[in-house]
Structure formats: structure tokens, C-alpha cells
Length: 193
Image: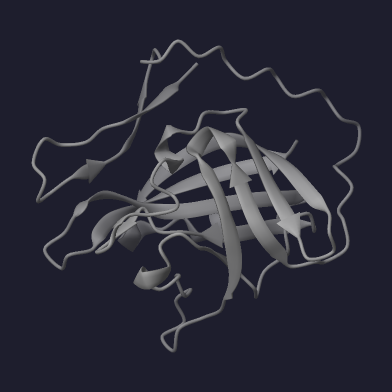
């Protein structure tokens, strides 16, 4: 089974955050159990905006706010002064509806470590819970983590239609570029638990 690790460079001015795969895990974590074979897709729930995200393995317990699109058509991100907040792309499905619900958070900001700082440490099978405005909670399990250069973002894999509910968590990774921004995205793909 492929393992994921977090790699940080020793130079403070150009840190590197990377999801690396190898033939072995650097942490003695048992592999995630194989999902039970279902004869039907998980039943979607009625639309309801997310209000809180809990990812115990990454130390996340954060409020969720709505995000839309910037004037150039790119997805908004939470402002730097709200590094402890997660944003939900409101033009897509709500968590638990059929399709990929997308939640975005900062890895860090000029103010220091942010809400998704530990996202690269997640492993397949880790639990993600999304509390919703209707009072319900939808549970997901991590399927895999991806890393992609921002100029080669896997749009279809993140935002493309899915036959069942799905969850995507997105943060920054790679290294700090000359423009002062991270070069890559770390993307968590999760399925209903």
C-alpha cells in the first residue's frame, strides 16, 4: 500500500509541503480496511449548507463559511485573516448531496499556521465529519491524497460529476514560488463512510 508523508525543507524561507508516495509507509499505520461492496450507491441527503468541519486525524474543528467565484472565474478562498476558517464552494453540492462538495482552507498565512496545516498527514480511511445547517452530520472517509501544480489543477477530478456523494478538501502545498504563493495544491478525495 502506498504511504503518504509530509516533507519539509530545512530552509525557513522556502519550505516544501509535499505528499510523497513510496512502497512503504514511514509510520506504522495499518492499511485502511477495504470498503464493503455495496450493491447501490450511498443514499444522498437533502441539500443543507455545511456549518462545521471535523477532521480528528488532522486536528481540524473549524467553522465553515460560503465561498463563490472571483471576477476572473477562479474559486474564492478564505481571507488570510480567517486562517482558522474553512470555505465551502457554494455553487456546488452541499456535503451529502450527490456530487463533489468542495471545502477549501489555508495551509498557512502571513499570520502563521492555518486550519489545514495537517491535511497532508491524512491517510486512507481517516474520518471526516461535516456538520450541516439542518442539524445533521455527514461522515466521509479519506480515499486518497493528491498533489498537483496549480497551473495543472485536476479540475475534472475535483469538480466533475460523481454518481454518489463525495467530498474534496483543498489546501496549498509544493513550495513557495517567487510570487510568494505556494506552487501546488494538496487535495483530499473522500467518500461516504
